[in-house]
Image (cartoon, rainbow, N blue to C red; front, side, top):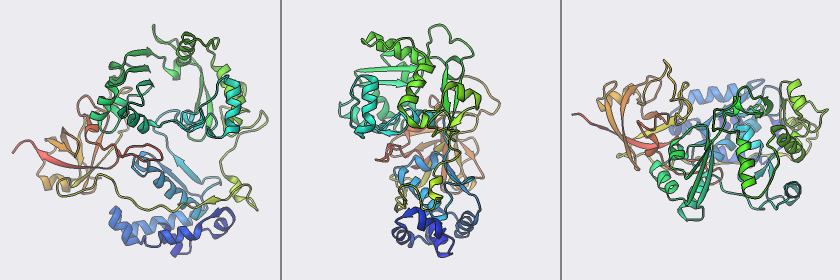
Length: 459
């Protein structure tokens, strides 16, 4: 797309000249990527790539939205950088109705990152390796924050293999069933000296834990805030009490801290939030009162007179641009690690269905007329090629394991591509097939690209 936009003269030269750097290196890097090359690599017709490139470049307003199909690859960060490059090339950033939007797969993923649930960030996306940023947290918390970035999830599993990580505290996660290469995940989790799980449900991970803390349902049994994908922070209000034996997440953490010799006082969500406001400049103006009056506020919101920013990066359109220019980052196409060959000729991609959620912890306990069991979705062409009937149970094998699952013919799939979900791991453990090849920058596993073959069970 980028090469076609440049060759058609549709790049936004004014924006590129004012707000970016590195364009010439980027132009050189994409030059070999002809429409024919794109069709060969993606099987998307060259004419469609051309039509899409022209439509995106000519649009008055355009936004790129993506989900895990971009990020669950061994080169996830490079995939996102490629999208950012397209937005810089066309100037579709920093203006109303334009931009880049990673659609979150779970409620409050944005809020988790905002609060520092990242290995290299403190609340408000302040870098943990920045001594100046770290100092105010040292003073507020009365302890020295470690100056080195921590482990992401893939790093943690590698550390378990090396016996560098021997204890794990899991909050609201089911890694035993959600991790790629499920056999490896089970082996490493069962080998820990201590595992604590804090969750609403007794997940498969919780079943093998040493300690389980039953937690409240945050959306209706707790006070607090939630942040959506447009950066809008909104209030969450407690509507009902949790069931007997379950406690609010912060109540559990406060009680545990007290047992460990640190009295944090009474757990109070607003008091915790006000500490966030003191330490995170982008949240400073968001009092509970203002959040309620305005039905939420988008960060950054620097003081109580600030309305919150409607969209990010508007500075890139100022003349001259305020602050540093944004650099194009050339990236190379790198095919999936799990290569296709004569032995494993089909590409399996995994994902979700509308009515289900991840490993089924939150959805499998209730009925829905939309639910159907796990299936191997194949194109009619592939089903015919293998002589497979609708509903026929087959063995799906990868280089790591095998599962048995019924076939479903799906007209929307192209030949060579198969689809399965992770929703029914007790019936069909799809992650026995997937590869744990991970992006070294983000730690995400390549769930979207597994090489498989299909074996008939009846003859």
